[in-house]
Image 1 (spheres, rainbow, N blue to C red):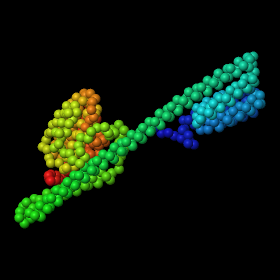
Image 2: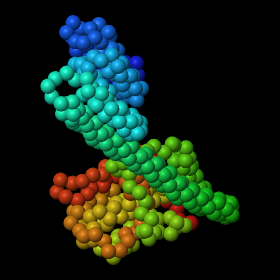
Image 3: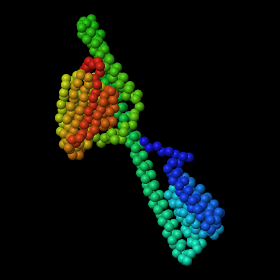
Image 4: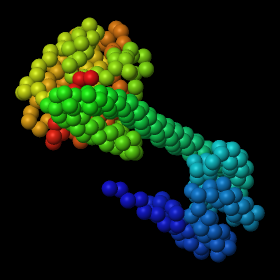
Length: 409
């Protein structure tokens, strides 16, 4: 884990580097206190430049103005170029790289150009002043262009980081919307399950009331159906409330899939699907181009309506993903494994297909929808690529501790 330490609100590494830079400028000013023109006053000007450079990142324009003023004092005093004048180049570099507006860097470059001419005119030597001016101009221009290049790259990196952060927020928002939409769909379907159970209870209760005197055994069986169906409906209602109560966590971007708006719905919203309708569902995907093989192992148990619907939807979602990503012609194996305490749904494709030419039969929201549905029944979902190629989805759904009686109205 990386710890970013700060001092006075600034990163420690940046502050340490700025202190080092200022220390070098101050050292150059102090080291030549005896030999340089101006003596102690010149050294004080150099030390003032060094102190100002400590804020070159946070206030680059102000630092450049202070350093330019101190350099003008040096020119007016007639001391000529000195060793600590490297601080002028550092201030120029800083204002071009760190200023909010490039205009400040351009103004600093103009001031530096004027300073080049003034410094060249005060240089003592055999060379012509214009030759010295050209040399100073080349050094100053090189520093300015280097700073501009670094500024451009820095702004480019910042724009990429901002774009990545924006895309991350958008993916999280899409994932939350997908989870919310899938939970609303699950809630509607569970509502239909509960409404169906209530209708069965009413019919059976009315039948028991009429048969109570004529056929007590039939009435007793009807009352038992009412009790079993009521318990089942109460359990489904509890799950419905849990779905509506839980907050919608953002799914990781790698697993969240946006809804397929162009796909054609495979099931009418008003009809409750069930495991018994899996053959028709598999035929639709065979017509779409998948080579589907269906196997059932174990002794099938009567599933509560909500769990029955969940098994159907998991198979539907997994086949939709297989058609989208594995493509037409891919081989898919759908396995329903019935064990004493759970039902296991396993959908495996080989990944050897080609892109579909038409829209795939629609599921819900891919892995997001499957996780939500399996989570309602405290199940587990494993989805990921296979070493041999293709994709594998496996959902384990625990059976209720007391199985209710499956009733047809």
